[in-house]
Image (tube, rainbow, N blue to C red; front, side, top):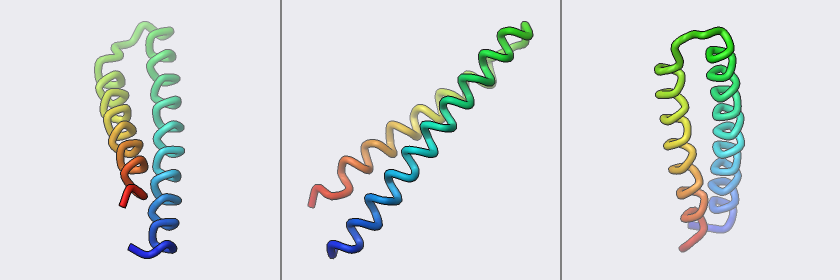
Length: 68
């Protein structure tokens, strides 16, 4: 992989991580609001887990992006 392609891949990975951070923060806000309202949070917590797992994969991908 050439240097420019590596730079593009790294930029994309960083963008995915930034988006993931925002999604996780927003989902935590949703859960907090549901709790304040006395509503069920099971589905929201499931989504949060999925966001966190995806974020872990994004971080792993970024770490491995430029290893070659």
